[in-house]
Length: 357
Image (cartoon, rainbow, N blue to C red):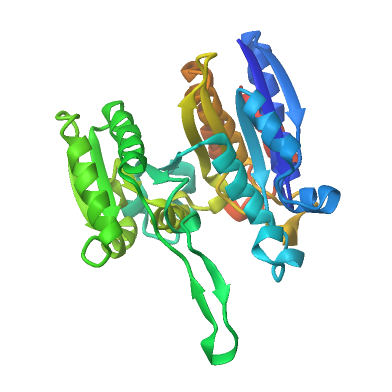
C-alpha cells in the first residue's frame, strides 16, 4: 500500500514519542514493502510560537490531503493564562473539527507484565479488554453560546451542551459495529436522570441498538460507570458515551493499564474516496513538559496509535497485530520506561519494539 501520513509532533514529549512511533511505522512498511510518505506539520504551542495560532490553515490543508494523521501531544504551561483562542488545546479541538473525526476509540487493555503497575488489585484488572467510544465533535466542548461575561459579582461563565440526533446516531453505529467484532456488548453512558441532553442520547442509542439485535445493550449513569471501571472493569466490552464524559472516563482507564503512557487512541471520521477512513491517531497522555527532552517519556501509547492507524485507516490488521504483539513482548522483557518501573529510555523502547518486529 501507499501510506500518505501527516505527522504532527506537537509540544513537550510529543516529538520524542512520535519519533519512535515513526521508527516503528517505517519498520512495518519495510517488512511489508509498503510505501510511506510522511509530511510534518505544526499544531499546538509550537504552532503558536511559529505562526501565532494553534492551528495554522496550512496544517488543516495538509490533514485534508493526507490519508491519516499521527499526533504527539499539545499543551505548554506558558499558555495557561492565555485567552482560549490562543491556547494550544484549541488547535487540537480545531483539527478534530476540520477533519470531521467524530468517534474517538480508546482501547484499554491490561497486560500480564503490567498487573503490578496498576494501583488496583491484580484480580480486578487482569483480563480487562475494552474500547471506550467517545463522541468527539459535539457536546459541551463545541456548543454555543459559551464564554465569560460581566464584572465583579455579575461575572458569569456559560458553556452549552448540544447534541443532534444525527450526531448521536453515527457514533452509536460505530460502537455497535465495533462490538460485533468483539464480545457483542455495548454499555451506553449518560446522565439521563438529570440532563435532557442525556435523555435524547439514551433514546436515540436505544433506537440504533434495534438495528443490531445480535449486540447486547445496557445503560449506566456516568457516576456509576466511573465507579464500575475500578470495581469491575472486566464487565465492559464497548463503552459508548458523549464528549465530556468520554474525556474523563477514558483517562480513568489509565489506572487499569498501569500508566497513561500505555494508552493509544484513534479518532475516526468518514471514509475517503480512496477507500481509507479519515483518522487522527494520538496517545492519550498529555505533553508532560516537565520530562521533555530527558528520555523518560513512554512511547508505547504513540506506538499503539500506529497500530490503530494501520488497522482502522488502512485495514492492515495483520501488521497492526504484529505491532501489538511486539509491544507485549517488550513489556514482558522489562525494557520499559520509568513510569512502568523500568530503566530504558524512550529511544531504547522504540529500538526494542523494532527488534521484536
